[in-house]
Image (cartoon, rainbow, N blue to C red; front, side):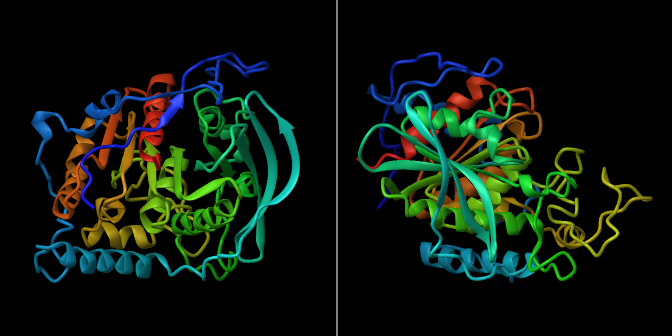
Length: 386
């Protein structure tokens, strides 16, 4: 059904400082007092500036099949969407079967301010478990949920000591069930990722494998008794932003997503480093020296093919349609990123939807209280089921 407006979701009204907040993290609101949030508070973020409206740049149009035929109807788009996803999955490596019977194993629990934090374990890759944190607000009834992804699960849960990255904690305080996940098992060697089926026989680009892991996390979270499986989103910052972007685009059970300054399209800037072997540039070891692409240190692997054959990530963005997404842009995703985002707007327009593509902007790469509040209000508006 055509839907050109955001729904209104009850959101949190009273603020309180929680005992023992680390550094200068903002307080979380108590989840027991609710009030409506007005859609007008975030509507400006769904419109490009006049100077960038209907600007599509040199990005290949997703509304044209790879053979040159045009996409003219929603039925055409259904075929084109499949073509985009199938092509990218073939290039990145097909996923193993999803772990649809996945369930959380509860290890420990602690009462926090307005929610309970559970340390949990679940299978995120075949025969491989990871540890995460499940945060459940005290209010009753079925609740929306958000999966958060980062280097390790402690930061988003609010115990990692990094300000303005405690997404799971803040959303739990606003009434969401949250599952904070990360790659802490492999942080020590700075590879950030697992390999499938193993390092020597690896056959899936690491960033796509992370997306697969989050799809399995979705299945585990969806079985939590008070979670509404139709209202599960995903978010992350930087490395986590890349991860959340690939997960939400490739797995369509995520209802919506917010990506914090991941670098939403290819760019040879140092921090938009998709060429690294732990993202989209996997190649047979020894790995290239980390850092920017140079003649002496060229890119290798799939990334070279993608660039040479004019593929870019705006194609993956369109797989979200008509599901909504927000780019919380910083130094890597400036206002000019509306140019690739306009392609997603065009796809949604063909499908009869508006208000599905949003971007906010800040100067710094690091998130701040204001940019995060936009993320939280985005989820409060779009994960409403009333």
